[in-house]
Image (cartoon, rainbow, N blue to C red; front, top):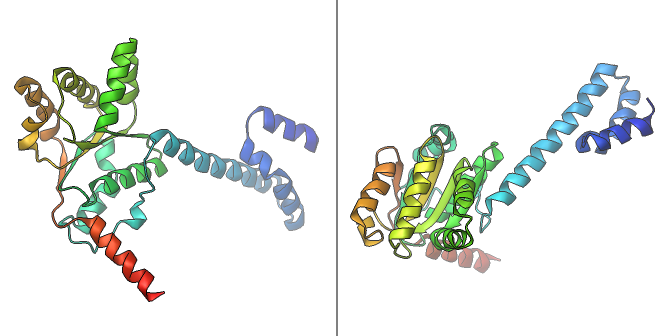
Length: 252
């Protein structure tokens, strides 16, 4: 099989990484006197690396993260009561493998959403799927799905990712239908899928958002016993970050 035919076969089989490096690896193999096996190994490695990178890019795109939050940028020096050890335990991703929920509680601007998204991105880099929705998006998209007759299909979509992030729970109150939708989603996900919720409200204040006591009990029961809970305390990190930025600019 000639080079042209081999490349055509790679194109047909969508071996894009292998195809992109074919000429380079063949030339290098000839220069370095590689064996046939070494040439094949190098081409397979090129394809593997290509799929790793594109897989991460695809998972991150599908997750719909709103910002560019990365664990490498998490400021451990900020005073907000969350310890380096607690973060380290989250980074082993066992909570995803176990299907455990995460609940990040604390005032606005303290870094809950940043950590939730950064963990989601980190999960995507480690072959997990994720989806990010704030509570308003969840309510509006679920309502649209109900109105169009596609509620079950939409619910199945939300049940699928390894990690579902629901940001800013408590930003608006839920009526009975919306509370029921949340309960059903959590029920779908309680069998091996992780849900991350950020909120300003401790669990014992969720009655301020879910007025139906029966649905409230069901929702909290699905979360309370198995969830990893982090309480963020301290001042707004946005102010700290703005101060650090001002100090950096002053030094220039």
